[in-house]
Image 1 (cartoon, rainbow, N blue to C red):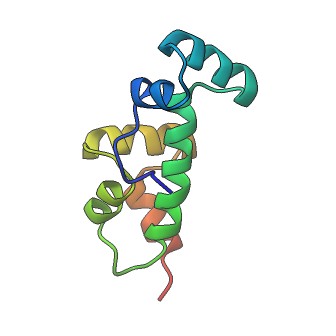
Image 2: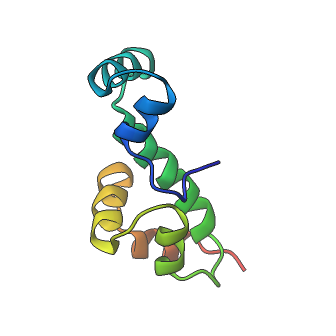
Length: 95
C-alpha cells in the first residue's frame, strides 16, 4: 500500500516501537530477508505489473514504485529478475 513512498528501516522501526537493530533482526528472522530486500522485491513485483501496460514509460513506473533513481531501479530489477527493465517491458507488453 505504501510502496510508492519513502520506506526506511528507521521509519519502520519507529512505527514498530523497536530499535533499528532489533527491528532489522526480528524482520529478518520472520521474513527470511532484510527489510530493504523485502521492500525492493515488492516494489519490483509492482513494477512488473505496471510495465505490462505498453503506455507506461519506465520513468513513470520506477517513480510510482518508490524508487528515486533510475540506476538503482535498474540494478535492483536486474538483480531480482535477471533481465533489464527495458528487456522485460519489450518482452511482456500487452495492448
